[in-house]
Amino acid sequence: MASTILPSAAQSIFEKNTTADINLDDLSLQDSKDYYIRTRCRLCGSEELTPVLSLTPTPPANAFINASLLGKTVNEYPLDVSFCEDCTHLQLVNVIDPEILFKNYVYVSGATNVMIDHMKNYAADVLKVANVHDVELVVEFGSNDGTLLRFFKESGHKVLGIDPAENLAAAASASGIPTIPSLFNLQCVRTVLKEHGKAKLICANHCCAHIDNLTEVFEAVRELMSPDGLWVFEVGYLLDVYTKALFDTIYHEHLDFHTVLPLQKILKKYQLQLVRADRVDIQGGALRCFVRHIADTNVLQEDIDNMNKLIQLEAAAGLHASPTFLNWGAQIDTIGLELRALLLALKANGKTIAGYGAPAKATTLMYHFGFTSDNISYIVDDNPLKQGLYTPGLNIPVVSSSKLREDRPDYVIILAWNFADSVIEQNTEYLQAGGRFIVPLPNVRIHATHATATASPIESTVSEAVMPSETEKATDSVTG
Image (cartoon, rainbow, N blue to C red; front, side):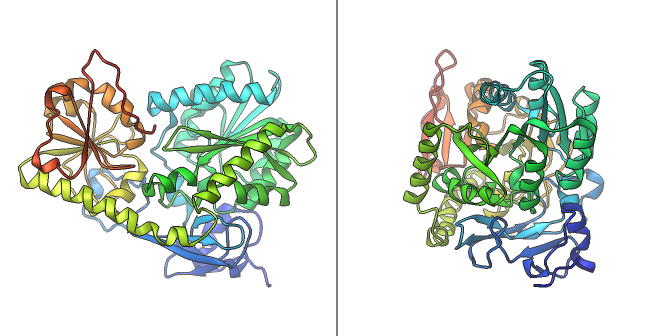
């Protein structure tokens, strides 16, 4: 097959993604200069991609705007998911130019205490395995605001971040975490090698799913990692995404939905080996992967056995076969009908509704379920970068969480459902005053205090989870 640099429509996209030539057979050009449709598997290169799910088109999920842009046309892009019949990898085929998605990014790792605690524990856990000495380099790509690297630095390690979001890279560097504003690719790695040498530990958290050219990432890791080094990365785990119906984690930044089996296969092609995989209770359910050079013998049989158990769980859930996902859309729509009926009934009865949290996943959820500013008056969020902005496409205002205490809406739907426990525990005053929280996923639930626990007729279609009083410990098991 002939290989060439793309002309016109997609050239700008791939010049940012890779230093290698792009095969024209890998894509289908559209009447757009900012996205393309992938026709080969992102992991193995197979053409055997089966379309399995199409969600409502949306703008980029983090494309929040200020008031001056209200009323202007917003580009919406398809959300089409395909399954690779050869390696069993599930993937989004609509690829938007990363310059659009990441240049000025509004998600920050350090915005919530839940994520800060997770990063702190993550660093401690990894250091037990990696055996990194103080003088050895720890690199994180997709390092965001430097929250994770800060914990490595506090442990005495030399750190370096790599992130394409220029605003976050600058902020991290200013805070004492040196960060290169760049995509993680071979060109960037060769600069790092020249200036810093090889890395004993490489980390990447919830960003590998953001990268279209994963093969170059594998090559770049192989070059950067020392012979006895370790690469640790976290990704959303498809086993959780599917079994909990967390469809809203499908948005344009998330190109891949990973399982152990295809990762194990593809890494060997790049002289790397997946030596351990742990399930992690964060972002609805994640997979923490540990990768070494294929020649490295520092592998425990116990870890291999645990990975095989995960592969068996994946197979039992049907994740290695496309028919499983062909039926997924109907399951998602059932949840949507239930949630939309609840909100419409509440509004019809004069109830006020706000949202809590403006994560990227909320864009997918609100678009696919048909929510508008008529359903949700405003959204509160603790991230100051989002406050004062409007949600992508739907233009729902995002405000400080202090408005919740001032306004006291009747109901608040927790759009950042993965932090539902934390949100509920931090807002007992709102609950004691009669407010109620709606948790949309994995199933629709309403949370209230004991004092207001009697379900109204409007709420009869959903199960009510009664919150303990302020003196009792919350026992609700909402995934974090």
